[in-house]
Length: 344
Ligand code: PLP
Ligand code: COI
Image (cartoon, rainbow, N blue to C red; front, side, top):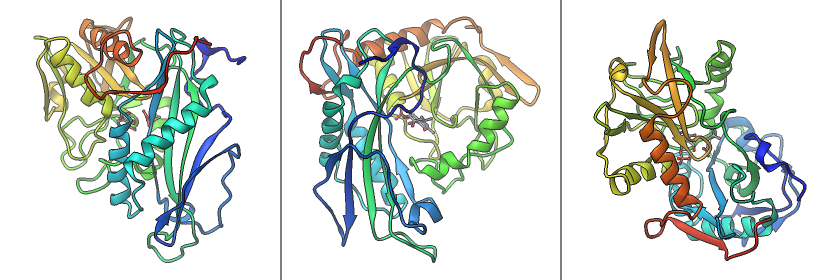
C-alpha cells in the first residue's frame, strides 16, 4: 500500500469496500459489502429534505504485535440505537452493527495503518432516510452504511495545545438532540466553526443554551479539565454527546492512574481555577487545550501552549496504550478484528 501514513491528516480517503444494508417494508435486508462508493438517491429522499440522518465514529488500530483491533464498538452500536430512536429511524441491531464493522475492517485490512505511524483506521457507520418525503414526517425506507478511511490527527500538530473560543452560537437546546449523533447537530455547527477559524481559533467551546453559564463541549469532542489537586472533571449535562472516549478516560483516571474523576456541572467562570484542559473523542483522541477566549476574557492554562499537561499526557499514554495493545485493557474493551499478522 503506497500511503504516506505518518503525514495523513483527518480526511476522507476512499478504500476498497463498504458495507450496505437497506431497510424496506419494516425490515433490514441481509446486508453486503460493495466496492461502489456512490449513493444514488431520489431527489426528495428524507435525508436530503429534512436531514434525517445520524452517524457514528470509531477506530481500528494495529497493535504492537501486528493484530488489528477495534475499541468498544458495542458502545457505538448502543449510541446509534439512541440516535435512531430520537430521529424516528429504525434501529440497526447491535450485534449486526458489530459484525458489519468487523467485515468492513477485515475487507480493507491493508488500509489499517502500521503500528507506530500515528495514523489509525477511522470507521464511519451511518444511516439515512432514502425514500421520497414531502410532508414533514419520517421516511419509510433507510440505508445503513459503513465506510472506513485511514486518518491522522484531527488537529494539525497532533498533541500541540489548541485555542478555543466561547462562541455567540448555541449547539443544543435543553430538550433537543445534543445527546445524540444527529447530522443536524453538525450542520448547524458549520457556521460557528468557520467563524472560529476565521478569527484564528481552533474550535468552539459551547455553553449550555438555557443559561449560557456552564461548559458543554466542542463541535466534535467532549472536554475534560484537571484541577490543581489532580482531579479529572468533565461537564455533566443532558445536552452533550456521551463520548465513549470520555467515559473510557474517566475509568482510566480512576482505575489505572489512581486519580479522582468526577462528572459535574462546570461553570465557565471557574475554568481559570484549572491547570489542564483537553478535548476528547474518537477523532480528537485527547487534544490539549492551552487557552480559552471568552469575549475578551482569556484563560491560559498553566500547562501552556507548548505541550500537554502532565495528567493529560498520562491519560493519553494510557488510553492509546490500551487501544494499541501496549497496556492490558479492561475486560470487553478490545474487539479483535484479525489475529497476529506482520505489520505492513
Ligand atoms: N462530542 C461530539 C459532538 C462528537 O462529535 C464526538 C465524536 O464522536 C464526541 C463528543 C466524542 O465522542 P466519542 O468519544 O464517542 O468519539
Ligand atoms: C468522531 O470523533 O468520531 C466524530 O465523529 C467527531 C467528528 C468531528 C469527526
